[in-house]
Image (tube, rainbow, N blue to C red; front, side):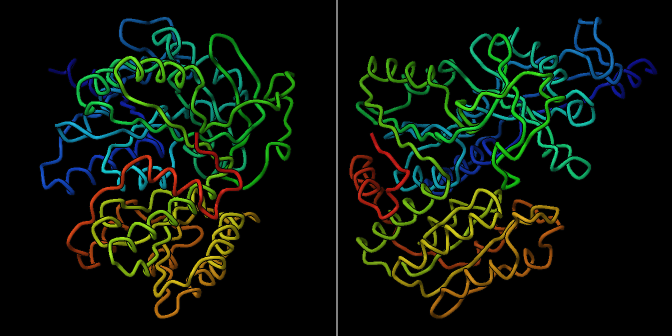
Length: 436
């Protein structure tokens, strides 16, 4: 009995996290509630590492140099497991973006990620992030030949948040088996597949066998040229022509095109250079959709980061605009979009606190100015305002607030993918947006 207790205490459990995981859960939840059926309960995929650095039967590692075990196919199956049973009239996959999930909800179809994040606390705590990241990635790449690993290290957040300082993005380079089964068995005949792709760029240092190292991230509001640390790059010059951490692997896109075509599913793509562009286009789409159904479409909800809820937006007939991070640049883009749009009667703002003040972070007064665009009621959520910018607001807070909105019944019929994509093409937010 004593040995069993000691073994239990020696095990540390980790699991995939990040924005993509949050959005996958939100997508499954919204589809379940919209259909009036029970949400599936699926155990989270995880791998274990004991505190001496040993994983499974591998006893060669020690401490932060230990090898990690992760089965990307299990993660893909877990993502699919978030979705209610039954068939679907389409699928949206791609880069993690709140507006992409809202697009999927307007079509009445699921959203699935093509990558996921795993925490790398050893990289955040170490002095050689590129070397430590590559060492930790070897185990994942050895066990999963169909993925690539991007180690992201952002020293701006060092000392405040290990999760924001360092994390690995595991990106599928081929369509995983669980996604293949979903396309083949659960999509209706000729159901379209929409791939939403972030095509922004970032400097990276390439490694071997699908590994790359990225210094800095978009979360800080800085550009790739603002990060210079040759020691962390181990003397290797960064490449300026690399995809960003949110990108979809080109190999997966081609694999999906071939597989979809073989099963009679047309594949369309939505490419955006900056997240704000897609947010504006989807917000315009929602407004057109609501007005076509004789709704006012005069209530805007501004979501930020994890503070979103596609189900309550759909249920209450709201127009959603999602900001990836609480940056001044994001608020500026939102303000320009509002200035060019017909006024909204109400504007509710959920400004997610970043956790620490930075020159690039939007001030609370800037968020309040956004709410001031409303003709009747404009408000920055009080809990967000009290916590901003150094506090923490739980991810379910937006759900708790938005559930107070009344139902907007009857539900509107879902949009057809060709019509929705055509409307996005003619949106005012066409600079930096391409639909093919």
